[in-house]
Length: 354
Length: 269
Image (cartoon, rainbow over all chains, first blue to last red; front, side, top):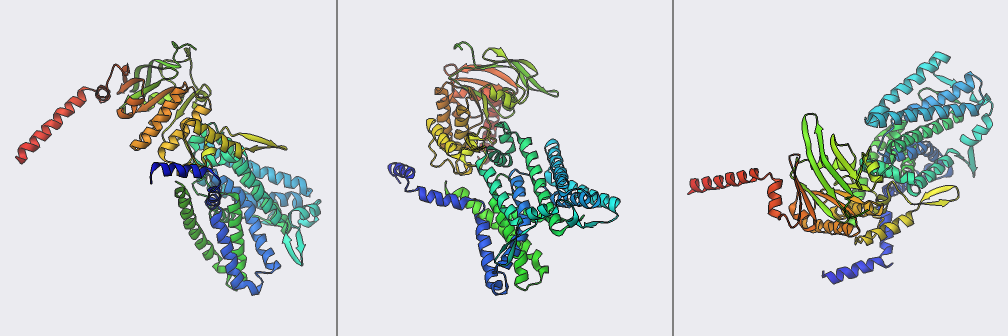
């Protein structure tokens, strides 16, 4: 190619003829594209395999969306944290702790639900703050720090609950003052032609939209990508790295407390073991959603799609008549496939526009 | 500011690490609109000097003058506020972020929409493209990830960013080290652009062939000491290279190599 034709190409690149292909390739570069096609493929698979057994009707849809919603609320917050380059393994324990605080205060001490929710939320935020502070002050991997707090918080929840009540489960929330409004907000069902869609689905979608907006349309979002992509470079450019990270840990704890409130209000009781393994499911959903484990790249929409995939598979295999014991095999396999596909997509994205 | 006052002056700067003299009695200046090359082999003290200049740590002895006044920077951020921008070889860019997001990281343009202050992506894209064009860098799409750029382009974007955010002194740490010949030429062109815009540039390198065409003056370091500062008329490439290697050492090496070659010729012959 001669240099003059190369120049013509550069000139052509500036007119709108090539803008179309630019927009298309930009779309394909998006981190959530893999999860989008994955979700479509899995829906199609269960539609064929279990479509006549209820997967396709509104009741089936409502059932997997509810499973997806509770995980999705967590996964969206965890996605922001992981894009910022950190992990939080303690969120499952925070779900248990926040739920038990809410139940103890209302059932045991006769509080109104709303101040009890406030205390549970503040306690969760404090845990998130401590996690974040420990990570940024010590410089140790957040994986280790939050692995430690996972056990500390779970242990405290079990020990204190048994000390105070002599039990590990508390029920009877329905009689607490303020329950009706809380039930409407966190645990009601929206009836659509006979099928009850959990209100948590709205929380999930709302949080996904807010998180996406924060990531792509605010300075803070840009800082999250910067901090996760190259902490030192971000610090050199004046990004308040510590503040960003601590805030992200507080957001994951906040999401965990919301899930706790939804579960406790919905089941009218709490169990000290609530939320176990949720930290892993959230990370799996985030990774399936295209977020890089090393930080600096990912999306909240991807995490929401990852949670959708999780819900569809979990409920789908039941509709397909497969023993639910097989679920974990599917989950692990999907994680593996997702990581491989995402790596392929990302490498292509980085090379295609050279 | 008159021509007589350098932007930055170091007087008899010394830095120890434990019992090691990393820098001994270094003096140098850089003026507005000139490229001052800091040359030295590995271990000559270049990195330590950059860190003192950039405000990572202070010197143990000696003075650091900015516009003729004594300063002591508490952090790189502090130095940056005073117009001293350092572009490190690897730590300048975030590969998976777009060019314009990288360009404005930490100083993002915002737009008020109702109660919300939003990141203004359109302005960031347009202004980044504009500023890069001013430096003679044409990037087709500033929303593409930095990782898709070549090493030279990345360095150039980092230089353009420092210039845009009001740097008066640009410290470039081995900007051409990992680059091929053509790419190094691209970066050298942007250094010339920065100089033409009146910046003082400190160009750190161990490559004489990159330094010589662009440099106005050369300060040569060897084992933590300075051989002094020379203008282009005073030294040639060969002399600089000899000083960097420590003079005698290179002569000794020449002799040794000649001896090996001789011995080889004898044993085969």
